[in-house]
Image (tube, rainbow, N blue to C red; front, side, top):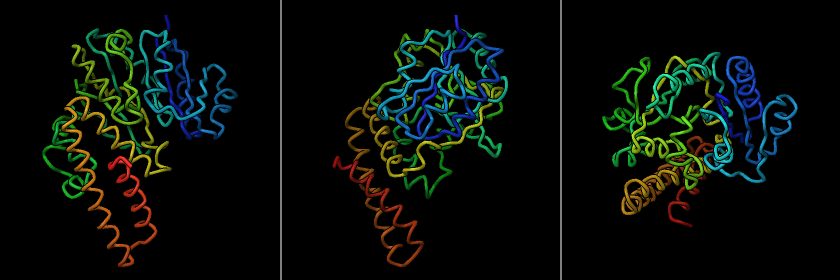
Amino acid sequence: MVDLTISIVSYRTPDLLRGCLSALASERGSLEMDVTVVDNASADGSVNLTRTEFPWVNVIANPRNAGFGAAHNQVLRQARGRYWLILNSDAAPAPGALGTLVAALDADPAVAVAGPRLRYPDGSVQPSRRRFPTLATLFLESTQIQRFSPDNRVLRAYYLQDQSDDEPQDVDWLVGACLCLRAEAVRQVGVFDERFFMYSEEIDLCRRLKAAGWRVRYVPEAEVLHVEGASSRADLAVRDQRFQASKLAYAAKWHGRGVALVLRLYLVVEYLLRGVEESLALVKGSRRPERRARLRVIGHGLRHALGL
């Protein structure tokens, strides 16, 4: 049986995709793997690049952007490996990292997810360990409250700042840039929930796994270079809208529709206040191109929060 089925979702990151696949190529001698790139209608040469430079990689060329979870599900539903690796196209495993993750799952049959230490391109550690979001977290993370009070007790707990990222440990969930999954466990609870187009899908999967009695393990001995947000930074308005849409979907699924409604109203108020702040700064002549760009993001988010 194949050791590892690897699924990579690609969206407008051809150069980073080349780096990702090159990193995998160097590991082919130590692990039996099958690799599939699912391209979400990048229209930038990524499909041809993969087929030409990495002929051992399977390619699925989607005619439209299916989203992160749905694209991975195209691979996972037909996966042959004992373990499944979810990998971003902007992530490059260090030598031996994949073998270390496989060994972690081999060593403990109760672990369903093993995730590496992520590093930014400058070598610094990229926070990837989390507790499940509480109600307070949903109203604080990536909001103006976090902007004005980034070091508050709720967010410190959410980001596991009370535990060293140098130590292997069980966690609630891990950032989905690189996750090694036990096939048996995921088959039990189901693949990614496709209501999450992008963001929060890994939180939901880990929550379902833990509810079924499985464990999620952070394995810092395995390291992966991750260029965070490479595929989404080109359109900040869309990224913001998708992040908040997934947060609302998560709130509705795990905390109830009433909480999701209150959260939606809260986001409307926040967008309005941010819009007023940026508009006043624009009138005063402060960094006008930046202010106009922010107002476009705010307007897009407000329309979505209002359901327009």
